[in-house]
Length: 410
Image (cartoon, rainbow, N blue to C red; front, side, top):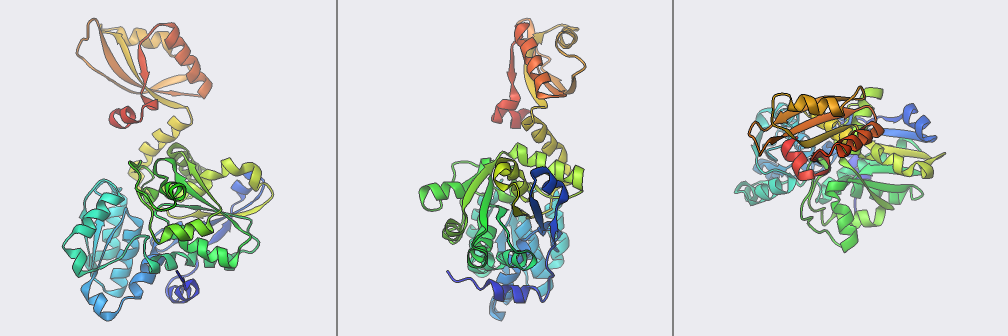
């Protein structure tokens, strides 16, 4: 596949400026190297997705434009398409998963205004995509794929062109991988124009679809995915994207969703950077490469900043759980008025506090069950608490370590 990324950039930059590439002193000091952040969260729609959407829609013929466009997206591609529909006066139909953060849905409506229609369906990108492709509108309109499209890949590659024009001598580049559009486009540009740069693609552990493709030699559908990092959670990478990523990426790396959550909070609390979970993946991986990158020059892509403020509490719970500070236990205790009080007096001290309490009022024998959220000052304090629980012979289950129970109960 031949990508004219330079040509796409000339068209794109007639309308949109470069996004900043900023030296980050906090991260540079922490990892003892030179770390630059490519701030795609500062893009007009707060993510790099506008690049591919613009390149694809601007290439349509007048006849194709008159038909209108259709797409499926978890949010950022939808915003890019909506922006282009409004600015180019093209009618668009946008399918979005029903569980898309409300901030993204409202933002798409605001951007596209009267030029777009939003249809909410499915619980992840792939089910939403299937619904869009299977709709009656798919045959009548031009489909704008979120990543598996020649012109979309070409447009995302503009990110790479901007980076090499902004900075030379890059040793490492860390970038998020979802469906593979950004990795394919940016990777192709770097392979041809900065071959010495080592490219590391980062996926969330619960949706490592590119890793599965690498292992099988072609794109495969994962049996299940964790949609938590919604901007990078796809069951199957693109057929066009896979070979380009295979050629360009030197390493693929996965990071826990909890660690990405902790990174998101740290970027905001310490530096005021509002990034979404997928946008944090590149920085999240740095701990695992700390020894390798010391003394080097590297770039991390902050791919988007469309984070719903209503998710912060959820993100904080996941981050605290991953860090070993916030835990949820299902505990069996005496079914009597002072049963809970007796339990807590025996077990808790100044190093812990209760964050949540819910219990079954029904009696099971002479006992009942309660869900208890406990935040500890340190992981060692929590281990000591578990030791006291075990020593007291109390029956309990760590809900935090059971993915199914955690999502259902917490």
